Length: 131
Image 1 (cartoon, rainbow, N blue to C red):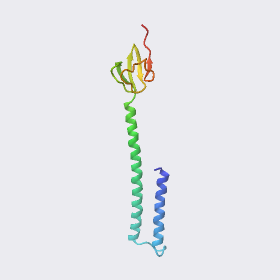
Image 2 (cartoon, rainbow, N blue to C red; image 1 turned 90 degrees about the vertical axis):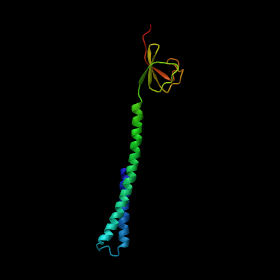
Image 3 (spheres, rainbow, N blue to C red; image 1 turned 180 degrees about the vertical axis):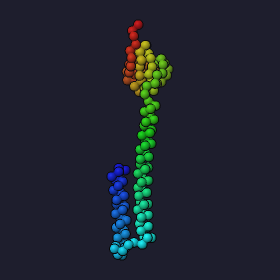
Image 4 (cartoon, rainbow, N blue to C red; image 1 turned 120 degrees about the vertical axis):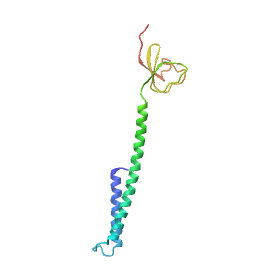
């Protein structure tokens, strides 16, 4: 919930409580009894607490989603896996050497998808010296 919506909801609650007080109090010029004042204040406080609880749950859910995304990003990146092995599958971001060059997996690469022969799976990062 946006801050403006949150404040609007609180204002509506206060307005509703004041309207109720005006309806139920025979003479608005009289000072409400301590008991009645306490009841209206507690009603507004309960509404405020409920609104705050919903708002906090929304922010907590957003924070959990962001923390999950950060964890995934931190686990990503380039990971050197040594010399390419045809019998192995590689995850996106894996770096391997093949024929003297360095290759990065653009996506999860299946067994048998070799650097230089599967351009949709591998990107040349550093070309090796010709021999």
